[in-house]
Each structure stands twice: as C-alpha cells, then as structure tokens.
Image (cartoon, rainbow, N blue to C red; front, side):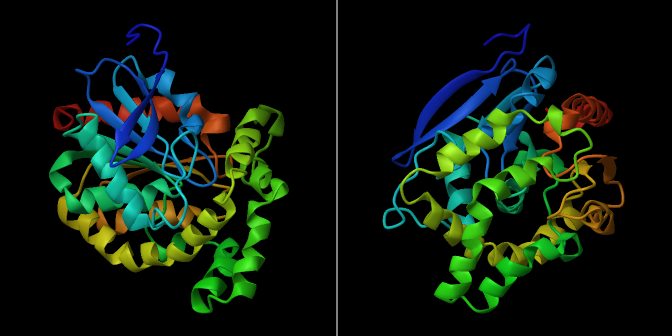
Length: 294
C-alpha cells in the first residue's frame, strides 16, 4: 500500500462464488471509508477522490455485481435486486476484513449502503451521501418513465426504458448541469458504455430499474435509522442533478438535525468537476467527528 502518494491498488476477491473487483488505498490502520458507486458507473467514479483522502483514511471501493470489472453473472444465476446486491456487498466487507467503517454512497450505492446500516448500525461510523437519495421529495420528474414501469410492468413499459441505456443518455448523466463540460473526462462515460455492453447487461439494468421501487418502500426504515442512530451525516450534492433534487439533500435534516449539507454548482456526477472541494469538505467533516471513527 502506497501511504505517501495515495495511489490506489486494484484487487479482485471471491465473494460467494463471484469475483468482486475493488480499489484500495491508504493505510489499513486509518479509519476506513467504504465507497459505493451507482448507475451506470463503477468504482472508476472515485479515481479522483481516492488519492485526495488516502493520506488520512483507508479507502475501499468495490464494483457491484453486473458493473465495472466485477462478475456479471447471468440473470438465471443471480437475482439482480438491491437486496441481493446489498447481501453481496455485506459479504464483501466481511471477506476483506471490515468491521467498522464510514460509508460514502452515491445513486444506487445509497440504498445498498443504507441497507448495510440498518442491518448493522454498530458498524457505521459516519455517512456521506453524494446525490444518494433517501426521501421521496428528492426524486425528480426524470423518474417518471421508471415509475410508470413500476405501476404497470408491461413489456412495452420495459422497452421504453431502453433509451436510458443508450449512449447519449449515459453521457447526459455526466454533462447535464455542468458549467464547463471540458472538465468531464470522456473515458468516464465511455468506460461505462463499454462495460454495460457486456452480453445480457441491458436486461440486468432493466431488472434493477424495476426493483428500485423496493428502495422507495424502504425509505421509512432508512429514515428511522437516521432518526434513531443519528450517525454523523454529510451530504455533498451536485445541485443541478436531473434525477435527485437538492431537496433530497436537505431532507436528511428532517430526521437528523445535525446533518451537514454542501451543494456544488454541478450535476449528478459531482466528483467529475468538484473532487477537490468535496474532499476538503469530507476531511473537515470527519475531523469534527474524529473520535467516533475508530
């Protein structure tokens, strides 16, 4: 482990028969942060943040099954639900030896990380949510086509969602709401596209679109966890996100009045343009709660 430069190392570990890829940096005796990515990306989204935090923290960023460089088993062999993804990531934490850790959650990573938290609140030292929603007021109109599929899961409504998987929509998630799109590295959405193009992956993503409704159903349980356990909470939010509204960030204060909220003038993938600012805010936040991280 390179303790000075913060360079990530790249590993693959077997978890219940699946090969799970992950990035790791920082000294293992430092407080750990588990970084959970979202759709349509992978741990690659954390490539700029990891070296900015590795001088103080131990960073672990896995790729979810079906994403990035982790295995993408066929749908007949693996049930692509958020419950199953969370079970796999919980087992992953056990395999790599994590017992207490902060979680940084983004997009799909939020309902996965929150499941870990409600199952084992004693393991969670802090919560950092970057456009990771847990409140209905945070859902924008961009969810309307997916909500129609929830209400009426017909082949026609499923097929209508295939447009979300097309090249222009993948790129849209990176560039929408960004003042200077020349800051967006093209390898980001290009890598996402290449890995989504694995055989059968479109159907995997459509299964997850359908199952996302079960995350909404769990919002009250997530909120009860925030209210009851009051983990140190920081939201770092691209305020121009077309999927998760700023009100979703502010809503964490409903259940945890001590939650801290930071907004940035950017879109969904805030780390693409504001990694340095977000890293600074994370360090300041965690410094204020240093005694709870060990």
